[in-house]
Length: 265
Length: 255
Image (cartoon, rainbow over the protein chains, first blue to last red):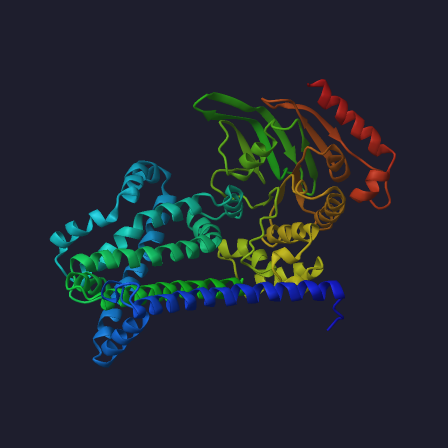
């Protein structure tokens, strides 16, 4: 280990200090928010019937853990989100590859994709229920519908913007279109595919919750709608907190995937 | 002896909605086995287009190309192509990059792998075989790119300004390096460049093209009376300046 100079040492120290301030501040914001919420609810500054409180939410969660009902809701939403995410990723890549293979096809379909992508997908949910019935499949399709068009468009863009010379290289080595795709375009687009996955996982969760609002007997989306109708704000807020945690967990899973990929490369 | 490559009256035009751009008119020349030919010309005159046509990436509008006495078209030719950048893929190791062509042509075998490794060793890259391309210097990257084509044992090497992405000092070294490798393996080579001194230092013959639409304005044979005829030695030889001036004047006469 080589000697560290004074200047370098002080730089390292200030970097460490910066990191510590960021970490402590993050936790402090959360804790003071929870404390303020709990405190104002307890002393009656806010109506705990409408705003609930951290302790009531925690208690409510614990009750549902004890009677095991919460697991079904969490599992349902998680399962539907993951399935629709995997389907979106797979079909997104396949369709983007199809568009890449045929420039004509992509030019023909471009306006349709743009319109479908900018359409508010929540408008489709009621239609899907009528067509497919109120079942998990509908909710998975609702989850996919939010992410799929944007996914195709952004993946196609990243495939199409791969350096033309890299593809020329494949042809000079006497490769064909298939080689260009598998040896140059796809490996070159892996970072874009992963960042697309990050967007998709969040959008699929949005779509699944919208679907559950309208047509479900289980799931956190169902719990939110049901509790708002019977005015059980503890349930409602607990479901939102659980959704937050779920979104964070799913996102960090993909972050992990990215880290593994970057380490490998 | 039959020339390795023979071009007969090649013409080519680019088509856009704004109209037709005639790029090449009536280009004919041949390259003998083991010969190193350089093509120079004003920028944008269609030098690279010519290489693309020879390699079969583009179809000529008129004219014929013979390789080893056979008309091309049945894709029988074995051509090595070096592009302006090395385009080593960052997601592959240097060794895997060298194997890319073999993979594509389904020629991966124990024998071809050994050959690739031997080439890496011969040209001093063996210790970097499992490194990423980003760990190599610019000159070493060009060498790896050359090995990627040499491992396919091409009948002719097409070099499309292969040193233009390097800075001046590295360009001199890389040109010297690659030039000597091509000489020592007795490969036939066709180099396209806008750098006249590069052409003079490397080639046996320099073909000068006119402005667009390009035709051949002059062919200058280059001979140096040197004990060690390497690109760097040539640059110091007295004849170098004369050749340079001849080509320079020919080019500017066309302006």
